[in-house]
Length: 410
Image (tube, rainbow, N blue to C red):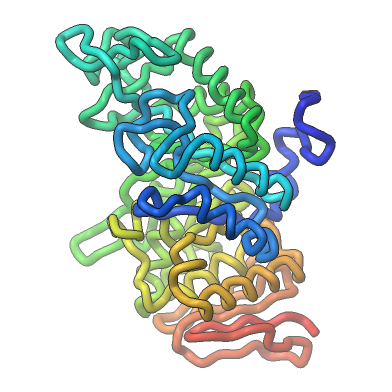
């Protein structure tokens, strides 16, 4: 897969990062970031991001958008957005490269806002801008002349018909251009909206170093709250990963949904009937991107927020466990210095103990008020207000905080 313009420091082997499994991601924005001269703000933080040990920073959508947050794109080739000018974005990408942190582009290609009215009086044409598609680029279910969607509809806007060869060719051209601008990783927005086989084609075409998809649908709930068994939920995410040719990881929404109930005094939820972690992490850890909150679930949208007085228990879980952990900007930079330092300390222990996406987990306790586990036989942790510590002289306390503690072999 030789790609000579990547420079010597960048691996062109598509699977190297997934195989290595030692990523820690930072989501580098929230729902309000567009108000705050964002590219410039992030550029100032790059040294701290690198020093903390993040391998990749997920940036908000960089293309011109109808909405300031970036999720209603129109002219994909214009990199002037509410987050800042193309010049400021390029300065940020350059700084990240200098500090060897990979920039992750937010790829919003399920839907696109039209520029002119076409068939049926809908804004389903793209005249006057690059990728000047006509109505055949828009699915028939959202007012276009294309085929029916290969996934779920994002309502109220034209959805792109990925079954059209000209559309896929243009998207791959655009993704390759983003790579040449300096983006190295991709995050696929609203991945439920189109078939995963197209994600596979896009990854093979543009060769990002690492990819993650947002396959987000509802967990299983009953009249009393969240079901203990979320196997059908994690199976859908696993099926999506599989259909990308295993080339993309996926956000572990199953783990998030379970963990945020568990910390409320239901830690029995963190062991599945097979004795494994109950999220995607328990089934396919090398493809599970774990997280506590993002710009949709938390921030000012708060669609599905993690209980705010328990977030360090959440981080103590995902930063000691297998999978690919993600830290949310708000927690790292807006919740005070103590939280920042505690997260850095957990990241540091993860790296020093060489915990990776495939590390083994041996769950010792999962009761109402206590969860404890040994990871890779070299790190031990507990969360919850139940008192517990490991037996055996080989364990030394590595760090602790409100309702969590981590030990390492001395």
